[in-house]
Length: 311
Image (cartoon, rainbow, N blue to C red):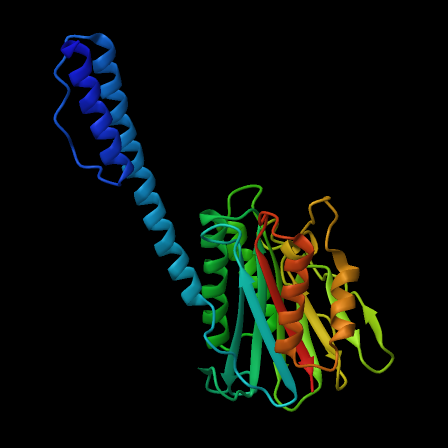
């Protein structure tokens, strides 16, 4: 009886120690029973596997912290506009990103100083890499870094889009790409300059006649093919009360327990219902409406919202 019971008791004790998170090495089981040695080896493999998983979990938390630090703590102010943004990853790290880059210096060639206070203009981005997790998170973080360098260099929106696409074509593996919406607004002006590289649907609410437009995308997603210079479309004139919403597909394609998608129409309903409120309030109402619709279903994709309102 001792031949079997003592090794089993030791294996049970080690299992309890592992369950409490103690993964340090242990004294091997002394037994001439083959099955006991097999169980002991299984314990060692389990301990090593748990150590690896805990390290991965720790590394992912660090990666998430680094990615979160790239989101602006506060958004710059621009006369005539309200801007609000939000992001929720599906995993510890996400394949979505956004940024609102406030700039002192309204014209190309002026001294460029970035600010999160009152700004002369702002460059905006919402980008969504294929998939979600650590790989896409690295890709969109790279895009965000390149964008900030381009803004500091004083490049136009067209040049920024062209160079981002060229660099991502060189860097991304085959089959990978990033949909991206780039925008620019200037303090005291009424126009929005924007380029959509495969990012859509885009939702534009016109306050004057209480109607919606769905602006087209302007070019292919970044990283697929270098087609040369990307030209920006004409500026979009915005009247007081107009609302421009850019959302990642994690919002539109969010599903309820029956599998029905949140969709464009529900986004429009929320915007219309809260059209007189601030950009921040509209963003919050969209976030809450989508969460209520999904009814706690597992998050299948990263979710990002960017709202620009003319005031």
